Amino acid sequence: MKPEPDTLHRYLFEHFPIRGEFVHLDQSWQGILENHDYPPLLRKTLGELCAAAVLLAATLKLEGSLVLQIQGQGAIRLLVVECTGDLAIRATAKWEGELEGTFAELVGDGNFAITLDQEGGKQTYQGIVALEGESVAEILQNYMTRSEQLETWIRLAADENCASGFLLQKLPGEPSGDEDAWSRITQLASTLSDEELRDLSVEVLLRRLFHEEDVRLFEGVPVSFRCSCSRDKVGEMLRMLGEEEIKSVLAERMAVDVQCAFCNRHYEFDSVDAAQLFATSIPVPPSDTRH
Image (cartoon, rainbow, N blue to C red; front, side, top):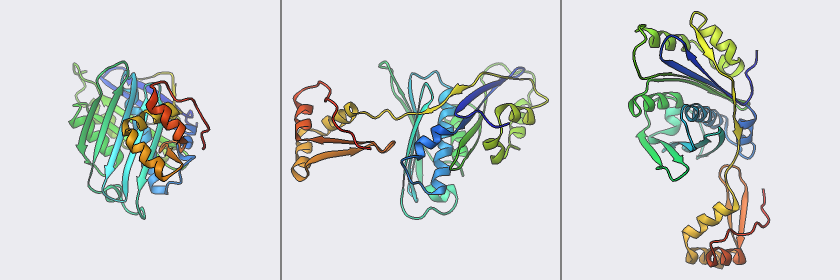
């Protein structure tokens, strides 16, 4: 039984405080890859981070977006994934040279940042820690356990076709009376292979892993690819650079060109557009946008 495409499923254990999630990305992952020619190892790592972002965003009551960022000093320079509260994702990556070796070797020294960019005037939260772990999953597990004091187990898998993730979290509160429950459940989950994670439905996975446990599975929630870039947002960014900076660019070129790193959409602002930017706060009327 194949996994339900572009869907996140939540589940919980009835008799002890453990919850879980499973996500499988198909067209949403292809939407991210469509405009980028990423090497295989980079695709795998970015896909894992995409699945992880959806898993973590789904654990939050989020009005806004969750951003996961890995910044390294190795061949992989930057991985960024944004997931909104309604589970729309976008992602981008930067790298240099040949990509060979383990994840730790590819990233080198660096840091991991998690940002909650909340809407409605709520305060933005950001946590930045050193990279600790030999994989994306280990980095996230360490972050959640040490920084958020929430015991978390994660398994991730990705290739050029799909990206999947499986999460378990031990919930705070009164113990269930089964002191070994967390250890037993995570040991069972550790038998999960990458192939099973990519190829099997959540129903089959839960039955294989936890057939002796009482698990409640909830209805799936759709995941999609969506880039939030717009001409208005680019215009605001150019305003922040300042009028003199924009004029200096226009003096060298006929227009200011901006390309979205997430979806490769291209925005062009000529001298007339620039004059409108700094003459008024009214949004710039749309002109031709090239892809």
